[in-house]
Structures are given as structure tokens and as C-alpha cells.
Image (tube, rainbow, N blue to C red; front, side, top):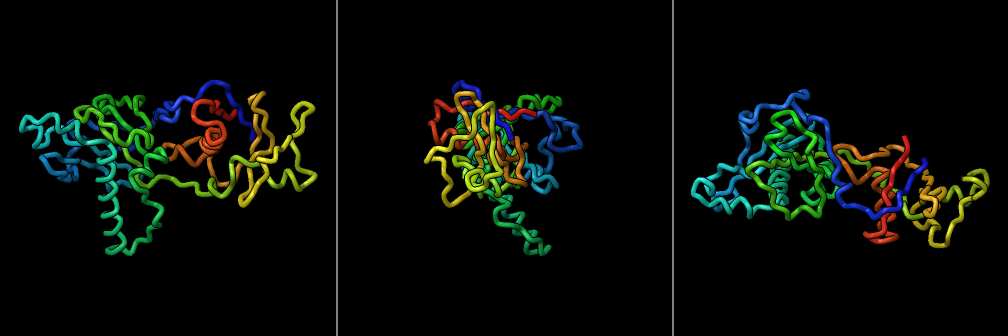
Length: 273
């Protein structure tokens, strides 16, 4: 699989991909007045309430926010909304998700894999949480959805206008962790029939690139040319999905380059279609 590396500084906002797909309701946005009908409400104390809808949805997508009309606001304590970081709202949602999972296990005998329900921080690391402008979403404009990361955990959005979309059972591609994205492929080194030649240049394998406990994926790499060829493990996507921005080829190789060079010198990685 050929990889292009663009030699400009890595921009953290690139990991906050934009989504253009509607998450539910058959692609039709609900009316804003109907968004929170039947919402599950959890009291955080001090008159602050978290609302959640979609907990039982088939696609495991929950919308969550701090209720902008909670008792604290009605008592003229508008500043209370600014005291609740989005990480706290996700924690409340994850706890409720586990409660629903436990109910399915106990009442319906449903089998649930423990890794299927990540923690709030893990959901942010996976890129399974998006921040939406509620008014724009109700109008059918989902282009402004912003993917969040673990660095956003303590941010406090404007809960009067913003809503979280949490894919609380994200797709997982654990095969991505079975290989070392910083090392060369063992097959390249041991099998005389496996080689990559670009121009007249064969792959040069530095000592630091030799695989150790895990097999590597690199078949050819020339950062000067901005080119790499990787042996992609089967069963994982090339690009991020809407629920997972961590366990795909682009993200895993970018993380490997970040490990090698540090935050400021990581080139942007793209894969030709």
C-alpha cells in the first residue's frame, strides 16, 4: 500500500475530521423542538442536568448535552453551564450505557464483549465523539460536526447551542495493534522474493527498523521523497471511519511518525485512491 507524506507540520485539527453523514432518523434531521423528547435525564447536583437520547438506538449513537433549561439556569445561575466539561457529560453517558448493557445481559441473556463499551477517555482517543451545533443539525446541516480527541476532554462548549454525538459502541480494529508500525516487515528481510524497488532504489532497512516482538509493516520508506509502502494487516480500514479515528492505516502510521519525530515535525499522511 503506497503512502504519501507531505512535508509540512502536523496540524492537530486534521484529526478532527468533519462528518457529512446523518447518524439516525433515516438521514432526515429531526425538528429542534423534538430533539430531546423522551430524553434520559441525570442530575449532577447543583441544579445541573445531563440529557441523553438514543441510548437504545440500533447504531449505538447517543446525543448528550447539559440541559440549557436545567434548574440552575432557571435560578439565574447561567455560569453553572460553564462548569461542566464535555468529558463529564461523556462519563455520565458511558455509565448509563453500561446500565443498559447490564440490563440486556441480565434480562435478555445478551452476550456483550467487555471491550465493546470503552471509557469516556477511550471514546475520545478513538475519535468516537463529535461536537454538533444543534441549531445547524436541526436544519439538516451536519457539515459542522467536529470530531473530538482526548485533548478536548476538559473543554466546556456552549451548551445552549452545542450537543455531543457519542458512538458509544465504536467499530474496533484490534488487528492494528498486533503489528509494529515503526518497524520493517519481517518477510521483507527473510524472504528473498519479497522486495520493493522504487526507481533504482531498494528498501534500506536501518538497525532501528528491525522488527522485535511484533512484525513490522514497512516495506519501503523514503521520507526525503515523502513515500512509504506498507504491508497492511487484513481486517482494518485504510482511512478513519465515523466511529474510529485511531485504528486505521493512516492514523496508525501517523502515530508511528509522531513517535519517531515528535509532535512538531510529523508530515501529513495521505493514501492515494
